[in-house]
View 1 (cartoon, rainbow, N blue to C red):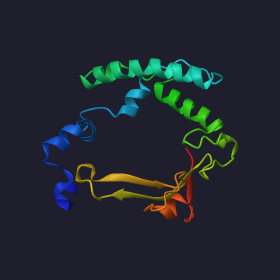
View 2 (spheres, one colour):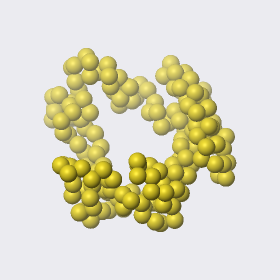
View 3 (cartoon, rainbow, N blue to C red):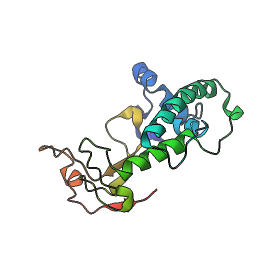
View 4 (cartoon, helix red, strand yellow):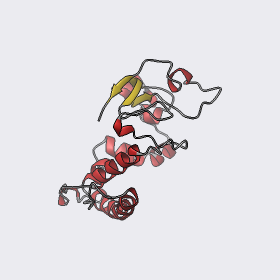
Length: 177
């Protein structure tokens, strides 16, 4: 369908195909998306672990992830069951710990967004969204793609093309996990 609508949606450009090889392989069900690979890597962590301990475990899991990705890409997908706690679960736990003392942006305001407080960016625990749509824009190699414009930016650039979004001039729609 997209090839009819946008002839350039499936690029003939060899460089684009090479640089986006995994994207196209996932799109054609030839490879597994990385988040699914992460769900197959076992992780050992506790809810009470410190952020530093979680990052150490993350580094160990990353090595396992890369090895498992190679094996799955080689066609051994079904040999690996989903563990009780995964690398993806660990990533979620790390994000939650960061939200408890927010340091996602360079402002590092330290508010507890999980407790409902807003950071310097104006963001809380929910995702504040200006718009969500299927993008059929400039990059033909990525057409179609899902686009989510979130609100809240700490940069305050004078000539921002998304100023109404980044500076909270629009009414957001909130999404929770």
